Length: 186
Image 1 (cartoon, rainbow, N blue to C red):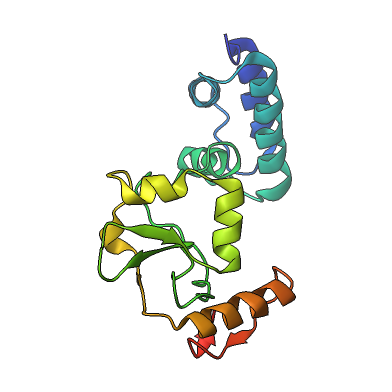
Image 2: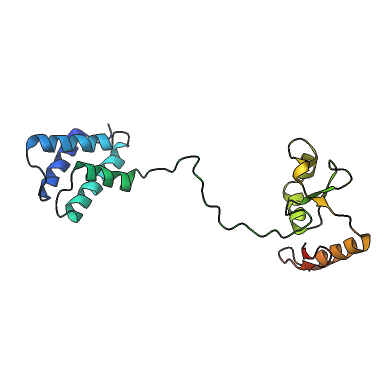
C-alpha cells in the first residue's frame, strides 16, 4: 500500500497550521484521502518521503491555504511532471554544415552513367563510415538504402582526383581544407 491512510491523516492535520485551511473533520479526512490518491501508484517509502516534502513545502511557503486544486498542481509540478507527447517535435539544434560537396557527408557517391553503381567517396566521412560501418556500401546499392538519393559523382579529371587524394592525405581527419576541384569543402 503506497501511502497509508493513518499517515495521510496526520499529514492533513499538520496542514491545519496554514491559515484558511478548513479545520473540520470532513475536510481533513478528504485532504488525507487526496494525499492517499496522489501517491496510489508510488512505492511506500518514496510515497512517504514525497508526501512529507509536499506538506512541508505547503506549510513553509503558503501564507494561506490555496485549496486542493493548488495542492494537486504542486504535486504534479514536483513529482509527476507532464511528459511531452511522443510525437512532439524536439529541437535538434542548428543544422551542421556539409563538409563534402561530393557525397553531401554520406560517404557514398553514385556514378552518373549507372545510378545503381555506388562507390566510396574520398572524404574523411567516407573513411569513418568505412571503419565504423563497412557494410554500408553494399546496403547503399541494395534495397535497404535508396541509391537514388545519393549524390552523383561529377566527372572527375584523374589528375584533379589525385590532387584531392594527396591533399586529404596531408590533412588531419578533423581538419577540413578548401578543395580547388569542387570549389567548396571536400
